[in-house]
Image (cartoon, rainbow, N blue to C red; front, top):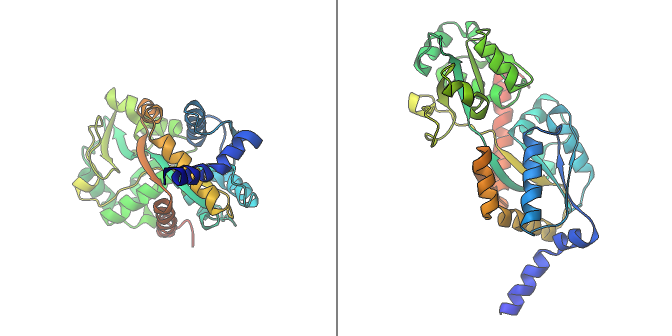
Length: 315
């Protein structure tokens, strides 16, 4: 029985063993070097190699259009069991807003990895002391409360749309000011160019701790350790959203290939090195693999589409 089990496990890892002997396991970061998807790809590469789970692992970048250029390349690599691509909620939104011909129903889901919850902040001098204060002003004059965040249709924009809905504000009337990055959003909030800003907690952490910004709420299901910010839910706004990152493979790979890739990521996730890396980078562990991630991805794609419809960005 033990021998049969050993043979089964050996056969499970055949595709990755083949990658070790006959070529690389390649991970595509569908964005420029240095960003979140690139960092995630290289973190996976490091742990897989250091822990001798898979060797060698190559990371390469295919930037553009919210990751949808990389997504198209992944789709064209049908059946390649040695290729992975990092992705996340940003891509889910970009597929809708960019009118991508390839969507996530055409990939092979492997695992959701990490996430970061979003916070809404105001300048320290703001008259809004709580979400209740901001919501009152928002309901009175939706267009008069400018809220800054990342690109149109992205995670920040979706969160503001959800908050508007929960607050009883028409999302189509809200004044969302998109910027290309968190640095520009931060500058706009600190410069009092907008009433509030939305981004991952890490983008604002230093200024919150320095007393320059006040965080009114966080999009987590419960209060987060080390982050003294109330959730939107506990303030009467039934909103929860994580800017999650995951990893997928091309369509058409064999069941054996998929099982091997899921097993490799499961093994990586269980290592102390991966857990230490999450702590160092302040990434929240949102690991979900195999069929559970398949279900999550379908639900999340539908959720994003509905949010973006409500905001008025897609029909």
